[in-house]
Length: 248
Ligand SMILES: [Mg+2]
Image 1 (cartoon, rainbow, N blue to C red):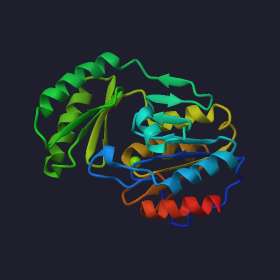
Image 2 (image 1 turned 60 degrees about the horizontal axis):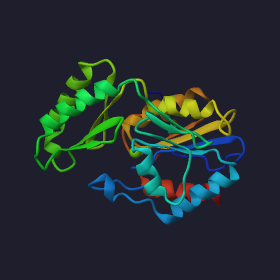
Image 3 (image 1 turned 180 degrees about the horizontal axis):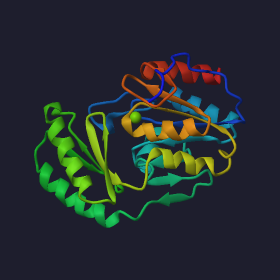
Image 4 (image 1 turned 120 degrees about the horizontal axis):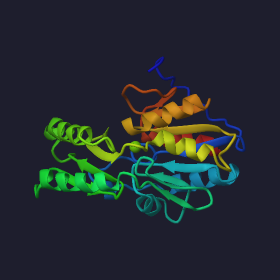
């Protein structure tokens, strides 16, 4: 963590020299009680489409969601995207790169999580394939128990890591994060050689901020909390206004 993030987020970027990376939940779209309830506003999708055009395709989504879930949210827009905190990546040519090394570890974790969560309604496991999210939004008083369980699970297998988030903790392939996904995009056309801009709101976005900082780019954190990002916007509404200013 360096200095406190600045609030004067730039809105002027050379379109053909900038590479854009966006988180979705809590950044482009408001968080909801369940991930299935989240929607991306049509004007947000329109502005992403405009940015994709003026930047000649250098716009990617970097999310904890699966690629399928990202595409559903942005339909009919299909962007280069990283899903499940870097474990999936669809490059600018449409080729999908999937992590595979932690498959057996995740299968074992899946069983332990299912047994631990049980049939109760207050904690819900969401199996994304390369990541298993344990949501406790309906029972915030169980936060410590959920985080302790997830940390123990990840500590017992070096192929896995626990990624805390907002009312959720995810068990993931330890080899992948959003920073690695951004670096992989930056190694390829049309992102290569450009200055990256990344905006996100949660702990899982911090490796992305660090990657962008090291690449001489612009990192923007949405909301409160300690961060490696250089800039801060207060909420999703402010992100929408910033996005509108970018394409104005
Ligand atoms: Mg988010």
